[in-house]
Length: 313
Image 1 (cartoon, one colour):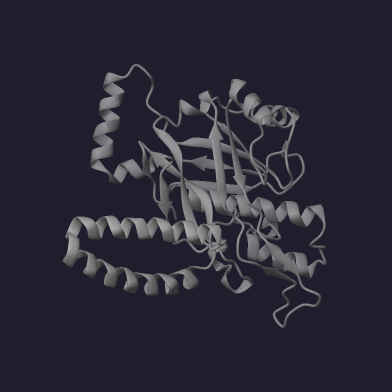
Image 2: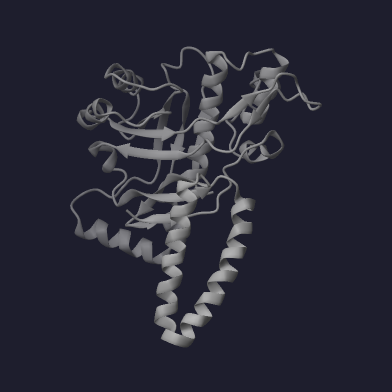
């Protein structure tokens, strides 16, 4: 499996939650119909103002929905638009919107040429450019075929190009995977880890009652069935490591890099450039393993196109 290292900050604090605001659910232009909250910061403020218990299922469920919204908006390629349903009568759908997985090709002439060649030489249809999305979020471990039937039911009156995604805090079970595989609808499953937080005994000066800890909000699994593969041809997933604390790792990287340069110069004098390059690669791999085992790095997945990782937001 290909490993991609990406310095993407995954430690959260209420002071740094502005990053979540860029990927909030859309609201109506009418002020009277605007939702009480639209992203993680506004929801935490709403929860405090309205005395919503952090231990309630409403709190954990809503927070997880925004966590999934943020994870999909930042981990998948550009041009993904998601909105939170936020009400009853949504047929179990928590997020809805559209995704254009091939949007990166418009700025890549070589990819455009490859896509055109595939269209002319392949009897199969070209992957569609925009996929309508419906997402169900489960903040608890999910088991049983009834969950997939519920998702299929929500897709009943939708176009055949609509993709349904089940988001869970747990890994995809063999039973869930089997029922997704045999479905005639385009279905997918993602694992997004919940945000880790501590409930404070008393509010801070800024009115904060929740302290978000480092970790959580990671996209760690994405699987889809054959029907969805018709729309996601040439796409796949790979693993990548993200640090829990970017500044801490950057500081340590500087120290390690200085040591590597010293060792590399010595190797170059004795063995040449080839030995230096090999030595640097070994040290980089060793450093990643050490950080992963010590909890400094977390593993998640990145989407690939024809084997190459796609950029994330």
